Amino acid sequence: MSTPIDAPPLVAAPAREATSPLRRIASDFVANPIAVGGLALLALVVAAAIFAPLISPQNPYDLAQIDIVDSKLPPGSPADSGGTFWLGTDDQGRDMLSAIFYGLRISLAVGVISTVLALVIGLAAGLAAAYFGGRLEMLIMRIVDIQLSFPSILIALILIAVLGQGTGKVITALVTVQWAYYARTVRSAALVEKRKEYIEAAHCLALSPARIVFRHLLPNCLPPMIVVATVQVAAAIALEATLSFLGLGLPITEPSLGLLIANGYQYLLSGKYWISFFPGLALLVTIVSINLVADQLRDVLNPRLQR
Image (cartoon, rainbow, N blue to C red):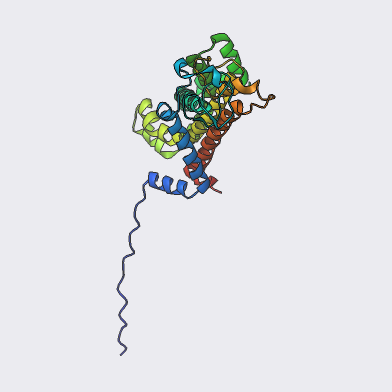
């Protein structure tokens, strides 16, 4: 009679540690060195803008600290009052390094504020169009289609010509230009989510439309909107710089990077390149760093797009 062979004892597999979504997103983001470099550049730009009064050699818009004798000095020139103009001075004798730090504050503030306001308006319009449908959806989307059929710069120029110059008026023009992008994007995402089972279950439970929209529909539409908003911050900064360069954006008392570039444009042919070159380089670094972060956010929030 054969003796049965004892089976080896069952060993439970080690349980996997639960990874939170934020930790997964952070680990995926850090895995891309280009995205990390873009984030580091963006952090430097934001820090320079926030701490501009503390790190700038002078306040370039305080008349008591500006001397016309220092006008158009090349980079590395010594200052009569002590110190060095590392990036030179402009036609009014302002230190270019300090002017760039202060200009970054205004450019970033205008870009972020206009993007946030446009995002709120676009989210409300897109969610209303997708959830309620019917004539409301037709009306909202026809307005979006008409606006997106025109170049953004053209709409902004018309609005600035009507409203006039000023920070608030530039932000109003940028919000008017941007909200349609968010409305179309969130409507497309909401239409996909609206057909899923959890939304149908919410309807069966007789939940209010406000609760369905804000507690169930909106959170699942936010990931693509975060990517669009990040890209639109860079677009808003570039559009504001274009308007200011043309003399139709911010007034000269509130100079942004676009105005700093415009101030030195007339001196390019005379060899005084630094008045426009360094503000333009700061604008380029800002926009590129934001776009690098947005590109990686797109891949992280939608793994199917990872390359």
